[in-house]
Length: 232
Image (cartoon, rainbow, N blue to C red; front, side):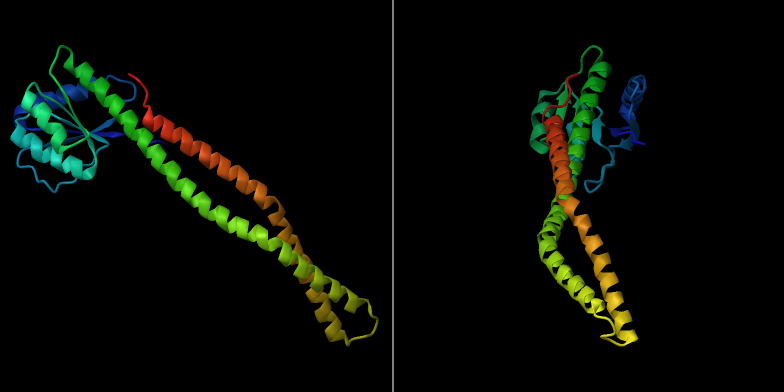
């Protein structure tokens, strides 16, 4: 089951209504995320923020700046509301993934709409990273598989020689004492078993090609979604 995304809402005692308003409005949506409330007062710049994105209340710049620096260090996208032109100009210089939304009529609707789009983009980036990880794993397995396929021919030649000589020796009646004949029978049986095991490799090359094609298609799709998130 897919876990809901998390939005960190950062405010102070003077902007508590902002946090409540955002949560109330967002929870009216069918796919509302989970929320984590954080206090910007006495902010620790080394603090790690748990959240897919962060929403910052309309705070003074001296409180917004350390929060943005923490978010920038964590690579967490941020959205804040401010009618101060100085805040809008400085926010992007501190955190390249920070967006400033000017207060407006129905600001909560606009904020939720923008936040939903940001969450969609974060999810697309996560899918792209997962696709890259799977592609790297598949590349490793494909390398091992190609080596096994290349070795199959030489291995089959050796097994054919071993099996043929064992059968030739067993065809000579009374040529060996009973214990030796029994050991030759064991050699023949094991050679047959190894030959059957190697036959499994005959389909490995086709399976590798299917796996590689599927991984490449998944990676291409994930990157396309990450580059062009859905419009809201």
